[in-house]
Length: 102
Image (cartoon, rainbow, N blue to C red; front, side, top):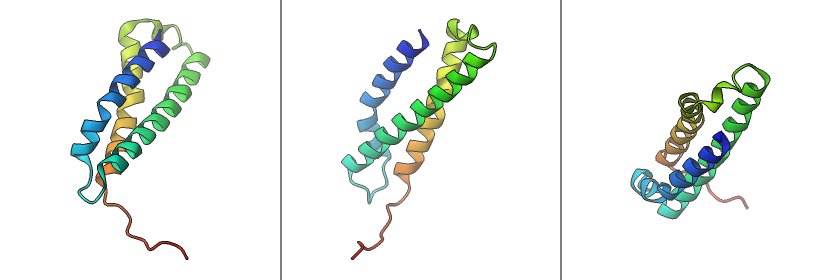
């Protein structure tokens, strides 16, 4: 059940990501670039955390606790909150102004 709920929450958050990234981006970053960065980073970080934490839970006694809605929501908050904060930090910082390589 946790995987289905996680997928549903992930899809809802990605649908809300474009308006959020457009508002939260650094002024020098194009809106589409900010959205693509946000979506990619959010997806990669949340998937990594989900599989790492669910692997840890499967090897310990916490796997049975994830069947309860309260623990499952706490688990998903532990997955999605750091991913959101990292992606948000990344699109708010100024873009690099390095010259192109020759």
